[in-house]
Length: 267
Image 1 (cartoon, rainbow, N blue to C red):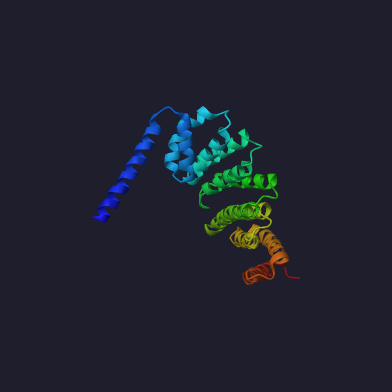
Image 2: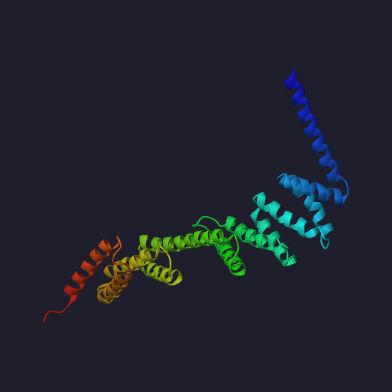
């Protein structure tokens, strides 16, 4: 009996709450809607709050309450995981209220929204590039921000993703024996990502691709291409002679030297 009373009470509260929300939703009282938005937002009821915000945001533009409302509007999209709209609305907030106390967090969440949109490495990285630009702009604009450590970590993660995509593209060329594009892709990687953890792999990959191109060439091009591969070996050794890839590099060198000695004219 006691349980039934409790259930009836809970349903009554729920019904009353829903009924009050519907009344606010359907009437034209923007003040009541604003107050309801504020309460729902603070309670984390973002879906209900958003429906009311969509009704009143245009009516409050230019009014004193607009700054708070539009920030809540952007952050509601963020909390609901709609990062495209969150990023867009936070950008609008930055533009509309550049002197706001909330502009720093809006700028960070705008950048982080684009970070959330960054896809896995095998897909197009347009959103990743956008996120990197936004995060770097945020770091430059707010060098002493409390979010600096997190922003730097996000930048590092996104850069690693792009680097991994680029090194995988080069490796794929090598894997399918398309050696000239492989060499070009590895060289572009070396140029584009000077601080990458994959840089040693790019130097070794260029050596491997150059060697494979040489030994699979027509006879008249073999010696010239072996000499180019030897140059790739020397570049690899210059920077990465103490790495685990050195064993494989030396195997390639041994065969290069053997082939070049065979082709040298006898005196």
